[in-house]
Each structure stands twice: as structure tokens, then as C-alpha cells.
Length: 226
Image (cartoon, rainbow, N blue to C red; front, side, top):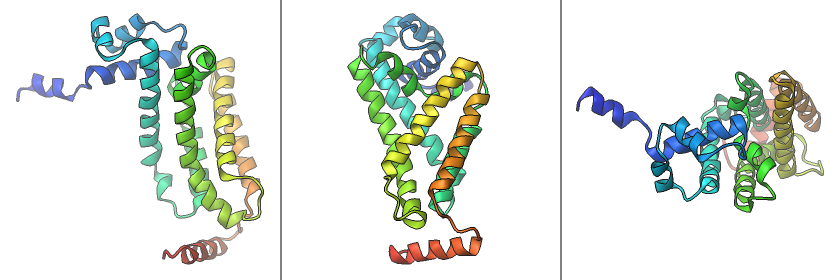
């Protein structure tokens, strides 16, 4: 194949380009202020191409919610903290990664789902349902590590792993709003730092590495793993 053919092959298809453009533009200027023309311009495609793949801006927004969710799950699923044995350390590693990506232009680190649902929760039920679904999917993944950490370090606590996972998302979404209000990420980083300090108070983690290793070994033996 020629170099031109290789370059064309490497480019995302038109649908993916529209979804990527929607994530960028809607996070930058909001759902209501974004037009189909804006998205086509950002994608470098015509309106004909847009309506070949999507019936409306709302239809695109629903698909973009799923596209954003897939992107986020790939990011967090491949993160180094996923390899940590201790589930509490994995959970804290997740929080630390959320803090680490609070850099650059605000629209690049804020959540498409939170941005859209704040505007469209009452006027576009399909968008609200999509955002609720994918926020829930992400929180459920976080809750798995919380549940394992709770079994090790807070077995008698009355709170649930799901409720703490959703609380974590609430803090993050609120941090994004404050970053927008303040015009920078510093306030969001402070909020996530407070979240981390609070989380540490919920778990009675042994202070020494040896004690933590014994806890992990006991948990592994109890579950039938080595």
C-alpha cells in the first residue's frame, strides 16, 4: 500500500470522528450551546455525514455518552494501580489518578456525562438515562475494590461499597463544577485531596507493611486464592 493509503487507513472512521468531536465540543461549551455545525466542523465532516450516522444532536449525545464511558474504562482499566494487590491501595490509586489528570484546559479533564446531565436531565430524558447508566457502570467498577477493601479493613462498617463509590463520583463531579467556576484545576485538586484524607479515615488499615501482608494473605486464603 502507498503512504497515503496507510495514512487514510489509520484515521478513525467518520462515526468515531463525530463522537470524538462531540466529546471535545460539548465539554468545552456545553450541550445546549453546541450545534451540529460545531460538531461537524470539529470533526472535519459534512452535515450529510453527520445525518448518515445520527438522527439528531440528541442521538449523537446518547452515543457520545457510551463512547466517553468506553474511553474512560480503557484509561482506568490499563492504569498501573490496577496491578496493586491491596484493594485499598488500588482504590486510593484510582483517586490519585483522578487527581493527576486534573491538568490542562478544563474541558479536557471534566466529565462529559456530568456536563450533559446537568443541562439535559429534565429536557432530554434519553440523555439523562444514558448519563445515569454510564456513571453507574463506572461507579460499580470502583465499588468492587471498595468492597474488597471494606472486607479487609472495615468489615463492621454500616456504609456500603456502592454508596461510597457514588459518593466518590459526587465529589469528583462537584470538583469539576468548582474548577469551571474558578477557572482552573487547583480547587478541584484540593477537593480530591480532601476526599483521599476522608477515605483513609473509613478504613482501619494496619500501620506496618507486615501486618497488611498478613491481612492480604488471610483474605486470599479465605477466598481460596493464593
